[in-house]
Length: 365
Image (cartoon, rainbow, N blue to C red; front, side, top):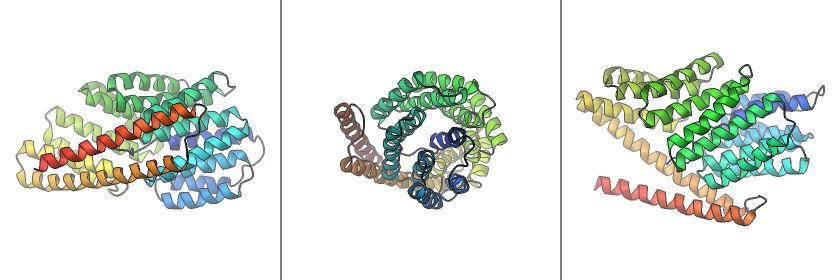
């Protein structure tokens, strides 16, 4: 029940935004182009630096396009820092700025970004409200072929993540397939290729959950192929974890634990707590089957400590989201409906956290 995800499409909204905004400015050089590029490169290496740079650009920029690009980077950076309240705050500012611009492209991008942030916080009802609004605008827009495909693909991908949370993976896969078809319509476009790798990864995880191992392996390898060509290190790591989990499911416990230990030695465990937690669990289970009880106990302790840390982080993020909602009502055309959805979503989320803690306590007892 993690409130944060190891990776989101927000960065890929920004990968799409920057070249498109440069086109809208035609021959005019974009403001703070060098600073924005540095901020985007810093998002997952030094998120605090990305916050500092993009906040400065947002404050001092004159052009709306530059301000929106800076805001998207702020959202990405705060997401990387697991500061959900701040991410929602700046996603909302992006939406408000896009509304005043009367630019339909900006509105589509902002609605998609805001819909994603609510999905990351598992407020899927609100997320779909924004994503549905974005779809309506897309139908009446003059976006380029690339813009249309990336925007639609992102919306289907985010909806897929939401349906995976709320319903099941079979329904999510239908949306992932729609996203894949959208991205594949422009195979040479770099942002679409990056998005495609992420959706293959999400679909692979769903297929693994459904125990469709051959299909899951195919999607993980498709992710690896794109990620290796484009230097998407995190996607490579997640795909390698998926392949190691498949080996374990197939009974190849020795190679599975060898691959997992090799991967664990390469990742930044502070930057990727969820990935670390899943590796500890996989190693624990593999060593249990192999009868190596000393190793089993070692990784079991690591896993339980990591799980507690994630639970604490989820509580903190939940409080951030709740504080943001209390301070500023959700901006939308149907405020009453949105607020009701939000209240019910937060109630369900807090109930789920309570049951999770009760389960952990009962298991220890």
